[in-house]
Amino acid sequence: MLAITRRAAPLALAALLALATATSAFAEIVFNRGNDSDPETLDPHKTSTVSEAHLLRDLFEGLVIHDMKGEVVPGVAESWTMSPDGKTYTFKLRANAKWSNGDPVLASDFVFSLRRMINPETGAKYANILYPVLNAEKINKAADNKRLEDLGVSAIDERTVEIKLERPTPYFLELLTHQTGLPVHPASVQKFGSEFIKPENWVSNGAYVLKEFVPNSHIKLAKSPAFHDAANVKIDTVIYYPTPDLASAVRRFQAGELHMTSDIPADQVKQLREKFGDQVKVAPYLGTYFLIINSSKKPFDDIRVRQALSMVIDREFLADEIWGGTMLPAYGVIPPNIGNYGMAAEADFKNASPLEREDRAKQLLADAGFGPGVPLRVQLRYNTTDNNRRTVIAIAEQWKAIGVETSFINTDGKTHFAFLRDGGDFDIARYGWIGDYSDPQNFLFLFQSDNTGFNSGKYNNPTFDALMRQAADEVDLAKRAAILREADSILAIEVPWIPLMFYSSKNLVSPKLVGFQQNLRGALPTRFLSLKP
Image (cartoon, rainbow, N blue to C red; front, side):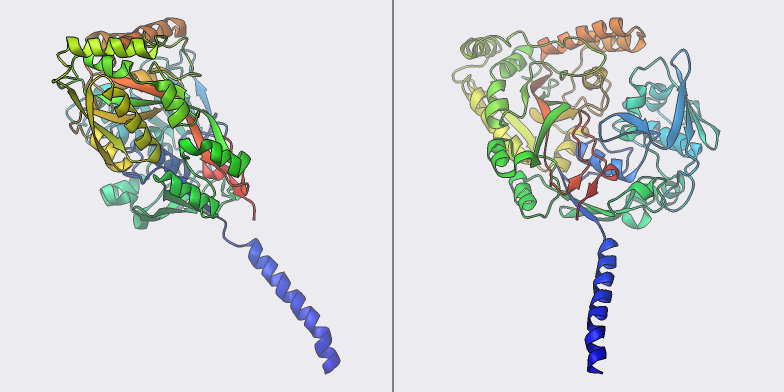
């Protein structure tokens, strides 16, 4: 008996080790991911922020998507064709595309969803992104939704979507990677109304489904077994944590609580590189950091006031000292590396010395009626992050040199951007715009007077609007670029918004995270990532 016992012990131990190995092999793989802020909503047709876009890329799949290189690749559509005149796209859907409840993804689902996006009753702030689609603008601006069937989107059969355009649109495929082109599950929307986005009602067609949404805490996503490429999705669970406090995000990363951050404290880049080495990732990003001026109210309707406020800001100081060299000074609206464009318009004071700028700004304010004893008072709103706080404080100090008195209002990102989108009153507000597609129109359209969703400063210039309409009708890319350049030049002079810096993407990335690749579009879908043990 004793001999048997001694022989059995190693066998029993081996069995336990084998069981432990098997259990480890099937252990849940959890990706802890930092995100700028909580989403205001997860309804694809009502969202607009970068933090929401990160979530929606995981939860839904459009006809086409961005891969980890930021390139347009097949999504639900396995293939597509374009007509010779560039005005009709035909998409063939995958036969195995399914919703998370097992329903097939049908061409009619895209018809339903694109109509919902354009329907004026939906109130989608981003509806004008889809205005290149035939009749989309007319329908969205109508007083009712009776013309939805006139939208240039149709289901040829269960697996074929046809989209007709008003005119050839060189960036149309990239436009479809945006959340405006995402499908929603028709039956869920019809059954639950606005509550279809609750976890208990959730149905989506992406790599993940929504399991938990605890505001100010976390959002938990679980891998969808119904997803057509589920076999190649390596991460089982994604937990998004809102991390507006960037210093806290760094501490959580260092403690192993986050595998990736969505941003880093810009003033700590040097120290972070010393501590984390190549875990600090900084790369160009298609975006511009702005201050929106409310040009619909006095005294900000005075071009001299706007020019003075812009002129005196030391953008090089902001980019190098406040943002640790991770941003580029911006003297115009359009970021570098954008497609379908040439040299962007810039402010005429770019090459003037700081003293020349200060003297000129003081004179402009004096001409507008401000000076000693009559200070210009400005209330500056911003969404709370460490980087934003340091930026606006530095700007206030620079404005002080020309006699401007600045007060601040700061809120969380969700509240801040909702306030601007809903038409709240303000003097000047911090804003950032990340390109939805690589084309100058996606930045210039922000200033069109009829863009109520994003023209928060209520800028209104009929000449600018006319140029934008002219560019929309121009099919020759070179001629179109020249027209857009003329519109861009108006903004450089009139300063409805103050461009401050061009963005870079800034992440801390754990060596355990495999497949991470920064790109100009900032698209980082979890489905293309994996984690080492």
